[in-house]
Image (cartoon, rainbow, N blue to C red):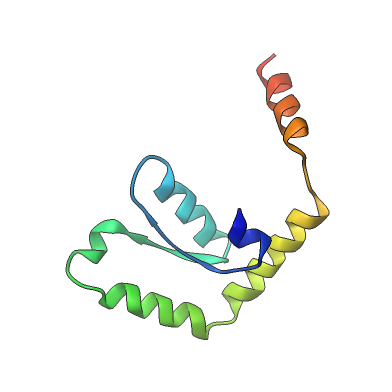
Length: 90
């Protein structure tokens, strides 16, 4: 949430639960990259390669700014989210 609020591209490594899925969603939407935690075991090379690529390629920053604009133009309060999910369960 904070990364989207400040238009920061993300490098994500899912460790448990739904983190890997969330990381892939960020990657699919183009505002970050994901790594499998097992890819870190042999060494930091893949991590370094992806990080440098992300810093050089401006598309990640551009897409992070797009996500930020979406959040600002379509805000939803906690109360609105709560009511949406309650109505969904009815």
